[in-house]
Length: 161
Image (tube, rainbow, N blue to C red; front, side):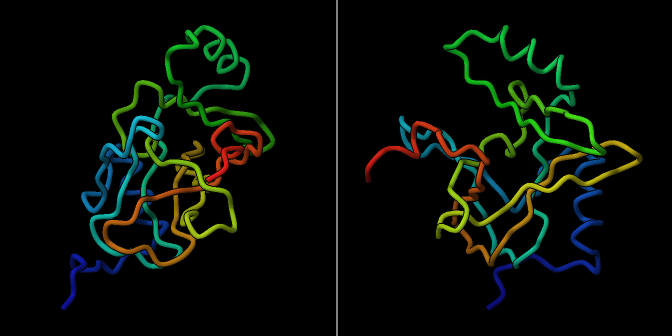
């Protein structure tokens, strides 16, 4: 039985461009509460193949200096969802703090662990960078999406399980 919606004849990059331009999330993803320590997470409603576009880390695109100023203005009690990256030799940030997209709810997992199932790639559309998450392996329906934030000293990584 095929639990997956009808596949379209579209490349993963074309799918990414479509959802980025539409400023929307795929209907095959949902967010839900995990627990008080982790908060929300983003989950697959249907299976995904390896290297498939999942979603955009949607928010306001900022230049590096503006992002640092904004990050310093956020009170410590407020969670911020700022993703810093380089594109065409310039430093940028996507501030998803006020975004309603599921991208900001994808949690961290160290690369090369079984929980890490996606990666962030920059997709260029009309000269502008968009942060998109793509699967690094097959993802089952109901599985939480996780990628490596690229920061090794995060407090939750130091906890003994």
